[in-house]
Length: 156
Image (cartoon, rainbow, N blue to C red):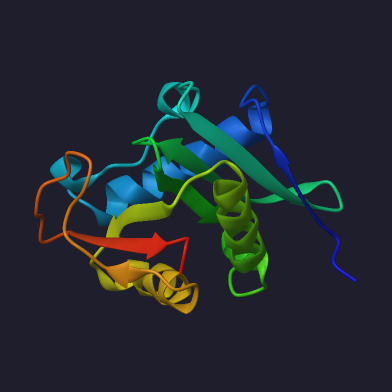
């Protein structure tokens, strides 16, 4: 039986602030500044964004967000799993939850931008496993050798 709980988070706690700061530090270490598209706390507090955290017996182990970018189109943002919990099912459970919430919210497509470096290979594999396919840049992104773009049709 799973001990994971996934809930909308208001981004007010110090634990999520620290968790997201680690995420931004990883992005700075692996992507040049012009290719870093991770949202900071203020960006995640935007009215177009819903943000979830994953806890396991009270410990913060993951997070992710969905940003409305069109009437029926959303962008997956800020997916992160605590390094010690990678490959333990946290990201899969969260992504399944977010895709379900996207469908319930009336979105027909979810897209994402992630890195092209080897560091991001596990993320790209996860997204592929969940039916995301490579696509052209969307929503104002431009072609970038440090980025890949993926999308998933929720109606299929």
